[in-house]
Length: 182
Length: 42
Image 1 (cartoon, chains in turn purple, blue):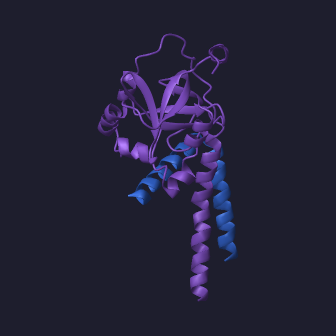
Image 2 (tube, rainbow over the protein chains, first blue to last red; image 1 turned 90 degrees about the vertical axis):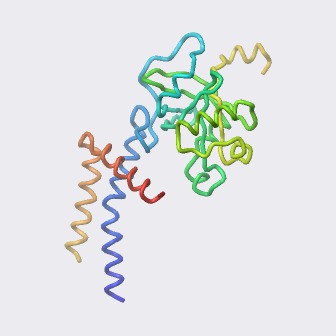
Image 3 (cartoon, rainbow over the protein chains, first blue to last red; image 1 turned 135 degrees about the vertical axis):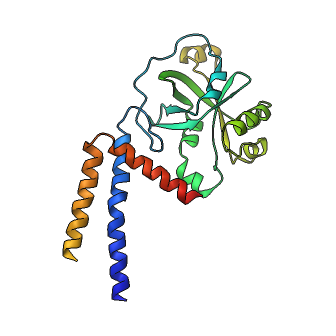
């Protein structure tokens, strides 16, 4: 019994070494300009802000990921992206699972406040994230996503709430919203 | 056992300091963590 207890203590103590390294790396990333592969990063600081006409978003179907930062909270993460019908979409899976509810916090934050900054190839785009639950574009989008990623993205999974889809719409200036009364 | 605890304390401090101070170590740690997550989730 004593041998078992001592073995357990030794294993737990040895686990502290890599865990402390991982936790330190994750905390350190929070102070960096953007995310790394897994760990969330700090605000997206570098890169010019895109000013101009709405881009043709088809080019995002050739890149793996983009960097997403919400205005509130100002943290960034790396996520998958796809475009269909010239519109830009990001999404989050596992939303009905326990793991998803514990791990995925940004979708609820984006649903509450959709103001976001996207960085693609070093250029920052100011956008408003709008959650979509039912949209005819999902048929085409699911085809694009399944060709691009090992993702279970279907219209049914979106309607069940397993997948939360956001369209990254152009940022609308606040004074424009006031004039329109929205 | 006392020596072992000293070893663990020193190794933990060394791992934290190396992640903080040596360029590239944080990236390597994240890569290993990513591999671990991929292995566990399979």
